[in-house]
Length: 462
Image 1: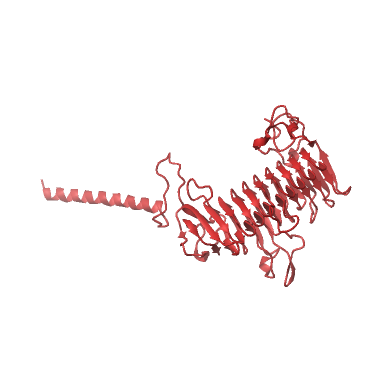
Image 2: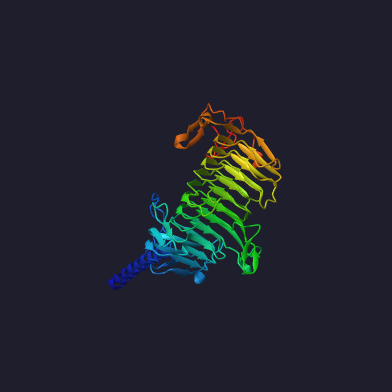
């Protein structure tokens, strides 16, 4: 036997096995960490491990950086902000795409951004399109970003559009907590017909202790515009704005205010507590404001302890307001007025309004073709259940439940905030079928009707 050949063959086999093993290890490293960030976690290898994987970072913001210019970042980039405390941040020129948005996320824990109330902002985007701010980059932390201070806590402006903001806490701002709008100027690119803010998704955020509005989306002066050195200029439209599942508490003005949202607007699933505690002007102390130029839906919201109106509607006249629970309003539960109102009607359906200093629903909307008020619970109001400013207010009012005593509604546990109905409730099966208006579920997402007919109020017995 030629031992020399045998030994050489064995050596060759060992070398090949070693090379193959190293190649597999290198491949795994490349797949798990394509951006080359050695601190990024890869996908969990244990199928039972439910730990949230960390996205691989394209760019990590340095502790001393105050601005990030995304001009050279490709679509789909991930911008990571390491956990800890830092000052204000400006993001500009981020250009993602619908399929590949640029993502801004926290890494390794909670990020706290702080600025003085006299500063212009704490978190700002300028000229950014198709991006997401996701404060869900660390397991077990509900709000991965905390935005503390600034005149405007978090502002998404200067032609920013197509963005999503989630899991962010905003607090202690001098004025608005979270603002999403580009105000018109003499620069034509900011004006109506030249700029439209689209696809605005604001959800699962917590905004509190603000000097002004909690959420301020779109311009408030849709019809008349604003004054500039070149004369009156009109604000751009807002299309497809969704503000949902947020919590606001102790805001100086409205908890949520939306203007110029001409189509696709939905405000739903929000809890608004103690709005309007220090308004800077009269009429700024309401819960939710569906402002001028805004159409769409406002539903399944809980509004508590507004010094003014629980919900105020100044919209386009294609507004559907349903399944809201409005408690302890210092003025009216719901107030409507027709400003710029080219649409056919205001529809107030299956709301529960409890305890108002003035009226349940007040309608100053004289120029709109019809106000539809159906299946609402209006109890313990000091004024009139459905108030009309004059006979010029056209009204269809059907199957509303009006009573002085809250206990007559037979809620499961009103004191604990459980508005489900007991089997003895007079609201059960006493409503009009409102499915033709698009009301097909209740505050708790129970299908309507659950019984023989629609129930009255925001909740359906099942």
